[in-house]
Amino acid sequence: GTDIEFRPGSHFSIEVSDSRTDQRLSRSQPDAVTPPHTTASVVRAPYMSPSIDSTVFNQPLDSGQKDPRALELLSQVQRAMGGKSALAAIHDWQRATRNTWTANGGTTMETTTFAAPQSIREESVGGNRTVTFSDGGAGWAWSSDRRLRNELPTDTATKLSFRALPALLLSDADPERAMILVGPSAILFADKHNSRVLMIVDPVSLLPKQINWTNLDGAQLQEVYWDWRLNANVMWWFQMARSRNNQEFLRSQVLSLRINRGVTLQQISQPYQ
Image (cartoon, rainbow, N blue to C red; front, side):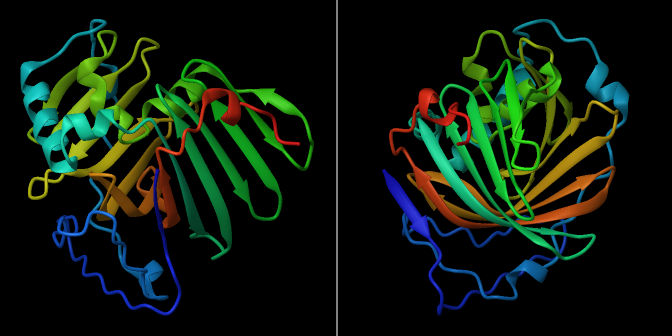
């Protein structure tokens, strides 16, 4: 497996000004990661595209439909990410992040673990501990407040794993997934559950710049990625901003990333003890 972790005492600078994703993408040292400066969390996120009209998400798609134009753009993204074979070689990963909440400046520590083909687990520790798990079709949530495990709504469970990068970028290899081009740099993906995710591609770096999806209550959620770094021959984001209807509520900074450690579905589906 491959590990990268931040170590205190080093220096880091980042320049993000507009819609351009960090163009200083170092590919010369694939496993080298420079820790961020302590002020990195206040760096303004790249430009976030406006909320997408609901008709974009709701347009008809046939199961397995593959728009040739979407396939071409996805192929370019795959190459920018490190190549399709490198993406396919990622069997599992674990990411630890520090999340800062916009409303009160509070922080939580979150660990996200993914095991192929599409199982994901999120553990968050702040005022309490929460655990959310999805195997791509069903899932559950647990909280230390109530110590009860509740089943996730199907729509929530499917989208939780469906939108995970880099697995989303291998949708062209899934015969049940559909994709169409909905803009010069935008691909709409749909899975067999009809969960939908819109990916907006940075036109300069050709890396994913933003993804959008709709919540159960109809709100549109957005994640913007920047500060991309190479590890295990694949590009990974190290900073992310999450918004609801274009109002940012969370900023996330990666603290460590572990790849291909042999994590299995059986391991990450265990309830928290």
